[in-house]
Length: 344
Image (cartoon, rainbow, N blue to C red; front, side, top):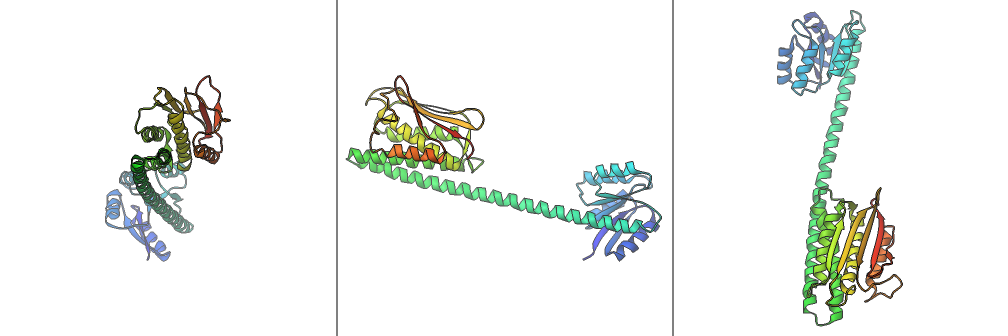
């Protein structure tokens, strides 16, 4: 199918030559003598490019370029000007023209014009194809993010249901050992569910806002472990940092285990106290996670209380983060620290 060119020039003889020469090159040429007829033609027809002469009877091509820009007409424009008017050609390029051709009386003018048109149309088609591809990529990414958010939503709901069932089983169990094991399992499931909940409520499904995630997690762990008594006061201080989802769930599991242990063992039953959880940016790409209390104290060399499964989980999760939990000496109580990188 022939491509249609709008040729804007008040020289009727030159316009006929354009129709003849460019017609032989495979183009259909529509002639317009001024801006009003050119804009009318553009409104009513479909064109691949515009050839625009600088000097017209009552206006210049630069004025028409401005009118095209004002109407968001983005067709490639070949600007035609005299041989001694390089500054005009440069101004036309700045105003949106794709290329320019020097008007001459020799035979080289039309081959140059045809070459400039072909190149400008090709570039415009490539640009349109790229814009279309970019738009499809954006739409595909948006669809994928919506689907991923929905998956995280469903996973979070399913895990919350499992945690609720375990909680029900805890309340019906007569064995203290079974209650304790199920309670710890519920807290671990809650940590994973909270991460998925943070993802589907976030603008970025790949990153978890740790201050919000830990704020919810700490409350849920406290509620699940202390179902029948008040227990120690939990305080959280978390800087607004984000982690990739797989790293966030590892941090969540570590906090769950350390916090569960502190709630259960740091203070004698019925005793008052405080457990502090902190996530503090250390400058650069490092973050320090700490869980500390003022209770009876525990060191890394002490035998684990309970089954020891929590300690193994902490060690394993820390290894996935490329770090290890360190227990710092204190006059009273226990302080566990984990230094990790923000980047995976």
